Length: 87
Image (cartoon, rainbow, N blue to C red):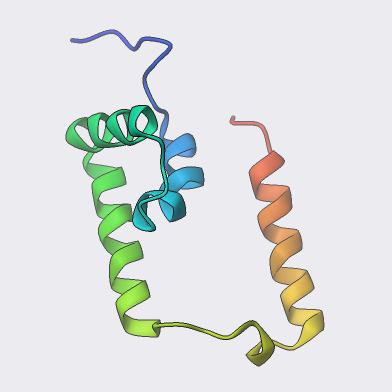
């Protein structure tokens, strides 16, 4: 079994980088770490596939189509999730 190194990407880091990955805006080194993680993690591979399917299904959702109070609530959930420490 391979031991993780400080260069290995965690599942949470992958989730945080998935948008940049899909938009092809990751630095080369980060993209290599992302791809290496995908090669070893079937769960993140499934997550990436689900994100691609969601994007294809929804296309582009204009920000204006989301009521301001719901947008703020949604953003609040993402902020709390992102700053939550792993168990």
